[in-house]
Image 1 (cartoon, one colour):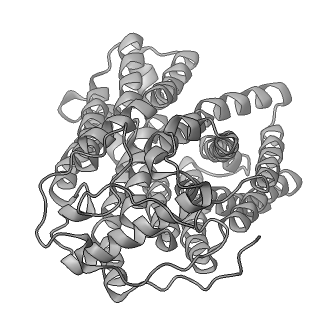
Image 2 (cartoon, rainbow, N blue to C red):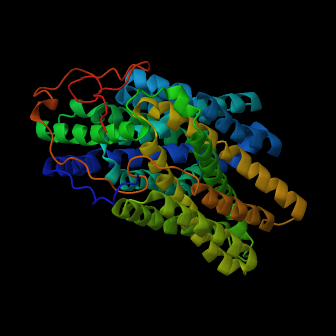
Image 3 (cartoon, helix red, strand yellow):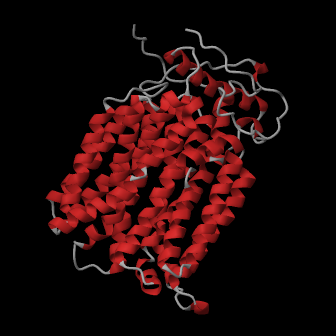
Length: 481
């Protein structure tokens, strides 16, 4: 028997205060981290000409090195997040940032194709686990009613990086010849060192769990933990009171849908990101600087789309219709870019960016809500690792289509098909928790659920047992219907 529609979530003042503090302290930090992450990932494209000339890389060798990153990222994503569960987000996210910064800095000293391949592979290993670790972190710090906006703000970091990486990297490339070093060496060195320094800032300001947050009051901790735990209990009621095996969840047919949809989103995003400069260049009569400026325009529109779609999905509490709409908008934008003139096509690509870019954070609210907390970290990591293979497939397939047709239009038609198919696939997705509808949560909690004093460092949940249901470390309570 279907449940009657329920009212939107009304959290207690303590929960609202805690959420406000998380948005003020944690979410901006993740935003800056993602700016650095995306910059170190895509700055290779700006160094292409100088790097290939100095190191002696062919176009094929350069493409292989660029793609190796995504292979390593996919292979090591799940192990990284299982280790995060053991060591805790504070230690593990710090480790990720510092090690990827070190490898990114070492790119300044590439002297052979072999070294280039090795460092690109190591960069993928070092970065593996970052994105799903942040998504999992938000799921343990924010009620579902606020995760869409938080995830959108976090992912705006990649949009902001897309806008700023060109001017910043271009300025660093202009340092060519200073102290006898090439511009690409300065670019890798400075941007890599920035990530290392940011890693130490992360260790200073990040806490592994709500219980360790000295900037929250005890009442705020109790309310926040209880609100998040009640969502987990609701998922338990929906599935049954029995404990859920993480491996059974990973074999869930819904996981296959999640893998496909996120893979499709990444194919679209990386194809647009990689080929946008070439598409803008087809307008004709533009200098390289003008091409760079116009390339940033669609991502400025995408930033607006990220924020607006996150707020809308949180307000109405219906993720799937919003995700479907964004994918249809993205596919429509790429289709229009094929049919119209180049200048109007740039506007069409703005529409495509406003669809495909915000689709990612809205998508992530669905697995967050569906997956049991006991399998959330490896489940999110698996989705992200397979999805990110789109970064390897997209530019390769797009290039093959351009070689065979002599135009980027074939690739844009392919993105249209992928966007529309992914949108239709969302119809098959089952939601968990607030995925389909906002559900009422208890507004108050017993005062005894959290001790008055802060416990010691949280080593993270044991992968073999259910997570703590309360901040006191008590075992998960049996779900009741």
